[in-house]
Length: 54
Image (cartoon, rainbow, N blue to C red):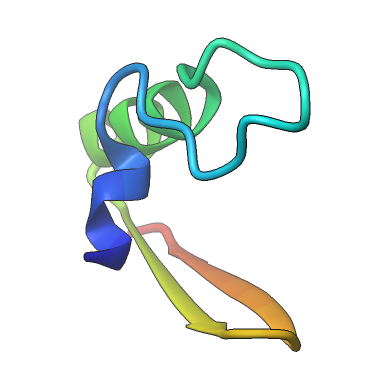
């Protein structure tokens, strides 16, 4: 499921460095500010992140 990418320590790729905390913190900051974040992804084409603020 694509929303798993916002889980703490969740990583989609093992061939790149990272701890898997970046998108978790991003979502936490946005939702704590009253906003929302969405992601649309298509295999082989990429992803679009939409961020909404009040």
